[in-house]
Length: 244
Image 1 (cartoon, one colour):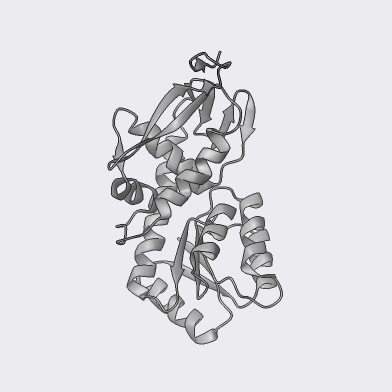
Image 2: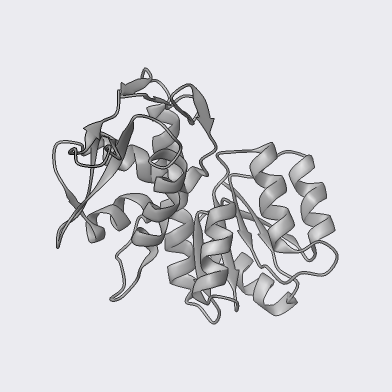
């Protein structure tokens, strides 16, 4: 598996490459954003490990370009900028995971391996037919979603969350279980990544003007995929009226 490491600190990049090789990967180092762009244009690797603060072209631009060229490419951000705002921003742009510096090399290898396994599973999922629920259509082969005939532009992480909920539609799923299925690891105490991702998914699917909502909250349990007719405001003196 070819891993592109985009890191301008030479000692950090070499350490990551050393541990990648020891784990059986084939790493390539790009010390700045321009070299990373050239590497991506030459053919996408199997995954990219990316710093945000880079000379020339920054990591945010690289995420946008990588998603245009290779929607399924696993992107793991490794950065000192890991406050909630920055984490939410890079995840909303399409990164699969975010790690803060300093970090454990063993954890980095584990997260890269988990991202590659998720990507392989998603490719296998592509053999499945589209799913139609309410006015929602999910095409796992193309990783596309449409609500009431209009495309919903989901990031790969948002799509993974939606599909995880669809696969477990018969029951409410806890935040810990969702985290394991979406990120491939254990959720740290107090981590709000699941809730943040659910809010973003709802804005694109539940709040897009269709006749249904899909991601339902189960108090003290978690979330469940359950198509539910949207309730429209009723005239004064009348009860709520279902959509449609």
